[in-house]
Length: 67
Image (cartoon, helix red, strand yellow):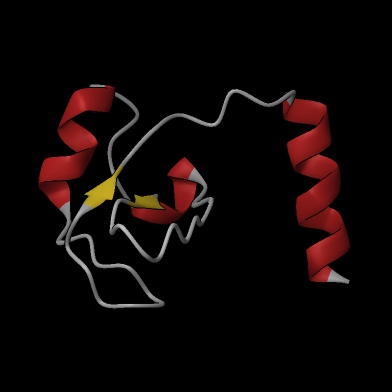
């Protein structure tokens, strides 16, 4: 999720599994399954975009955060 507010720009990576959606959910529909609000400024001007990073890098980051 990326905040589109002119002054905020906050970004959060939310793993798909944490959304509780079916694996068959088309990516464009993800935005419709939740009321997206920026956790920093409260703006509703948010964009949902895929995380194109290497899956091994993402997994390593998640493991570090869990420690």
